[in-house]
Length: 332
Image 1: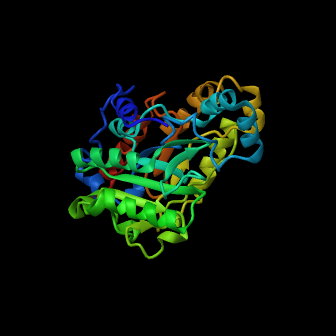
Image 2: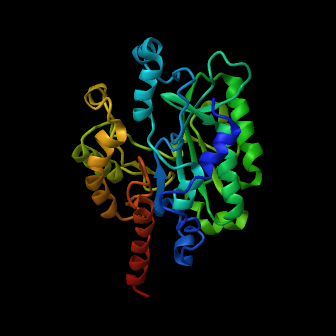
Image 3: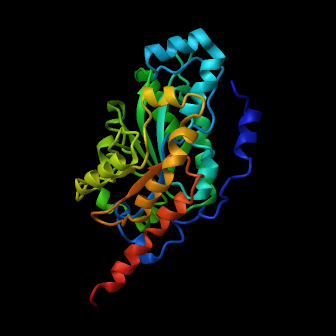
């Protein structure tokens, strides 16, 4: 398991793209901070926590039986291959936040056989303790009072009722009064959040959170998944789901990501997700992102793998300028 000193060292390594967008929400013109947040373009990361995974821990309970079997048979070798296909980000939470990322896609699990209720991030292999990641995010928010994050807890593994109680209590303990109460999505503007001093919107896709005022239900942030390795099919899917986007009542996540199949992994076994699938298709995907417009019928949150490989966050943030030009064209 990684030690606390190792975690600190990883957190403080130089970011690939610097902190040029650490305060982008707080710097938006008043016309945009008064708009519903569901109409703004917000950059997010897919499997946001996978900048580090633990090759010494057992394979996660989110994996299929045959993967667990291979990992047992070939141990370290199999896990080294899994790392290449489990990691979808290079930047830590702080580095992503400094770069402008404001939506985090989070999957969590207990460790079967471990005593207590500790919860870890997971994507094939176990990552850091959830508490460590939340504290890092909270620390950033304490220094950047006008920045707001979406935390989307959408997959849970090996978690009983007591684990959910533990995680929900942890979220309330770490973020406290920064947590935004569940309310009508149309009312959520940056101006509203700043006035209330809210900085965190948590989506908890599990019945355990029902009745907890600061836990938002998953149906308020749909994130349609294309589940394809082909960029053209991905873009067709993104276009279709945007047209079907609810006119009110929810945020919307456009997952601009490709998903490897077993066949893909077999063909690019030693290359890994980044080299074999992501890098070669990024130009096509980024061209689509650059052509988008935010607003009532447009994009809201857009997620990507390896957000540091391109100018992803900057491209998404700049889409909001189109809303200003639209307002300026309105008759007075």
